[in-house]
Amino acid sequence: MSRWGTCFHPVWGMPWPVRVCPSARPRYPEEAITTASTDTATYDLALIAAAAADAKKASDIVLIDMRGLVAYTDWLVVATGQTPRQTKGVAEEVRKRMKEETGRFARRTEGEREGEWVLMDYLDIVVHVFTPQSRDFYRLDRLWREAPHERFAPEPAPAPAPAAG
Image (cartoon, rainbow, N blue to C red):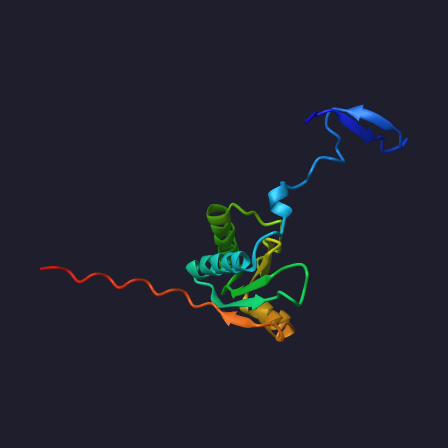
């Protein structure tokens, strides 16, 4: 594929040859904006995000199944951190795990500076991390009460083996 192409000049509207047309250059990698995942795969993504939140001691983690209700995402993952610092830590852990385990990056992240409500949009899933006050104020669980909800229950750690002796 040639790097040379034709682009329309932004002022005159006439075609002009350019090495790389700015309007044809993708802003995001193609794999980051596709939503060709299966339903099972999107549920697994939600579980990865929920497990990451649980690893940073987030509480009241809920997975909300949005399939059939909205077109912009399949799952909402809602979690609570006790302080703005903890919500930032939870968001960072979710970002790290999603990158390591799936190779995905959030398309957009909001609220990380303040830490009261951090929103991470992975297209197929959207992760919300609230402080208790913000979660009580916005009440996403109640807003989407018609959607199926699932409380995240982490798998129990294996019991340590008895010492031989």
